[in-house]
Each structure stands twice: as C-alpha cells, then as structure tokens.
Length: 420
Ligand code: SF4
Image (cartoon, rainbow, N blue to C red; front, side):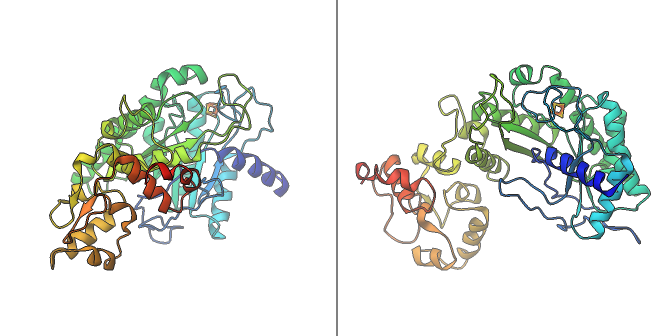
C-alpha cells in the first residue's frame, strides 16, 4: 500500500471521526511494563482541542466510514454521498506506533462505521487493540468505541485491551432515536453498556482475591449525546445523562452540539449555528451534579426546563433561591459554601483552611484570592456590609452581567437602567 493511499485514508477517516467528542483520556492508570512502549499512567495523557472545541490529543480515526445504517445526524450515514475508505487492522497498528514514536500522540481513539454487522466491526476494533498490546507491547492509552449491538463476548474482550470503552447514545431520548436512527434500537446501546458495567465490577472484585487478574477498561466507560439535533429540552438531556451516570456507572457523559451535516426536514438546516454555548451550560450542569452536590431537579424541572444561556446554572439556581442566602462564610459547611455563585471547590477549601485561624472579613477573602464579583451578593462575613441589601434577583443579575467580561454584557447594558 502506497504512502499516498494511507495518507488519503487518514484524511478521510480522521475527518469523519472529528464529530465524536467522547475522547477524554483521564482516569487511566495503565503503567508501562518492562520494555513496553508508552505509558498512560497518572495524568500522562493530556487533551487538546481544535478551534471548534473538539478533542484531538489522541490519534482519532475511524476504522472505516462505510456504514450499513442511515442515522440522519451522521456524516457517515449510508445515504450520504462522500468518499469512503477503510483501514486494514495492521495499518491502524502501524500508524499508531509510528505516530507514537514521533511523539505526535499519546494514544489511540478508534471508532468505526458499521460494515456488514456490529460483531464483524467490533471484532476488528478489538483486533487492533489486541495487536497493539500483545504484539507491539503498547502501553499507551486506547479508547475503543463499542459498536451498538455487538455481542457480550466481544464487549468482554474489548475491555481487556482498551483503557476506555464508549457506546455513544447519540440521541438523548428514545423518541428522538426512533425519528433519526430508525435502524437502531435503544437496547443496542444499553446492553453493551450494562455488560461493560458488570465486567468492570466483576474484574475489580476478582482483583481483590487474585492479584494477577487483568485490568478491565480501567478508565471506565463513557457516552456522548448530540445536542440540538432534535427538540429535546435541557431537562430531557440532563435527566437522560443522570440516568446513565446512575445506572451504568458512566465515567463521563459528553455533550456535542449538533453540526448540521444534512439537508433533512427532521434536522436543523445546514448553516444553522452549532449550539456551543448550550453545550457549555450542559457541561457546567453536569459538573454541578457530579461534584457540587446538586440534584437534577434543583437545576432543571418542569417550571425551568431549559438552562439560561446568559448566566451559568449555579448563578441561575441561586437567583431563583435567594431564600437560601446569605451564606455565612465563617460558619457554613462545605456543601453550602459550594452553592455560592463564584465559589469553586478550590475556593471553598481555601476558605475552610483560612477560617481555622481567624474570622474572615472582606479583606481576608480578597487576600486569599477569591473573586468576589459574583459571590459578594450571596455571602456575609465578619464585616457589617452585605452587597445584596434589598436587591431583587433581576437586579443582582443585571449588576453581575454589567461587571462581567462575558459576551452577554453588551446585550444587557441597554436594559440596566431598569435595574438600578
Ligand atoms: S451507525 Fe454510527 S456510523 Fe453508522 S450512520 Fe449511525 S451513527 Fe453513523
């Protein structure tokens, strides 16, 4: 095979893979074995992002962009008139090793369109990972996409070679899936997810008894949802994400703003804006649920089914719940402090440490490096003044936006006279 043909395949199959954002490589701890190649232990693998926010830190390719399915939102769908290509197993192995040796990549993210059937495709993905581990002694990071509908046996094997597995749910609701991907059934996603979840648990249990039990998908499993292809609310999306975190032990759910790739009456028209800001708000919500002790119904519910675009979800929640504020910086527990807009977990830890030695006032808070432009409306400390006074939620929002650097300041300033 000529170098030119490999290059051509790489162009086609790397371009087709860019729509998948579920390639974060954190959380793996596969260490280098003697004389092995690569090491994904610790935080050795980092992420980088293209201009449009997509992760490109790994060699990120499809095995093929041939596909027997016709999912409306996908550039690889069989009805799309595009150039097609397919790598051979050995070609992907050679590319990975060559790129790795040249320091271009830290690992491999391998996905695929479905050729012939899910098992035929999954078998090839597994073969790439197995060859890298067994024949090339490769200890770098491997993220394999699991093909919806692949057999339990192949899913079991995939986890023995890969650091992370992911089955992309793509459309957040069953109704949306029926509309846009009628070839796929909901259980084609949930069955392999359940298998991976159970295998991870089982291998961990066995490891407690038998030290030489191999690792199974040590970086866990993840999934991705496309945002804005169908009419789901943010509540639909986040309730669905919450379900996958809780029931399938997902390490991460990724949210990918829909990039219009098809003229189709079921989808936003070509040229429509990619909802990047909405994507960002969903990630912030995801963060609040996983690390800040919020429950989903506090942030999204029937009376608030969509996130605000102009302010972050924590500030939005606080403005709707002023009755919980002010929080006393000198006495509030960690969980309450974490709910204050503008205070991240790092700031919360700084407060808890600093208040062991003295009662904190505004000067102390500034000295320990807290950014108070948002927090000052929601806290009291060892000083008499309190910024909120008798301000209403819309007035606080106006003041915060007026003083922020964000893109919403411009839109908001013309309305400020109403709030001050
Ligand atoms: S099965 Fe996957 S690759 Fe094939 S059309 Fe659907 S989303 Fe695209």
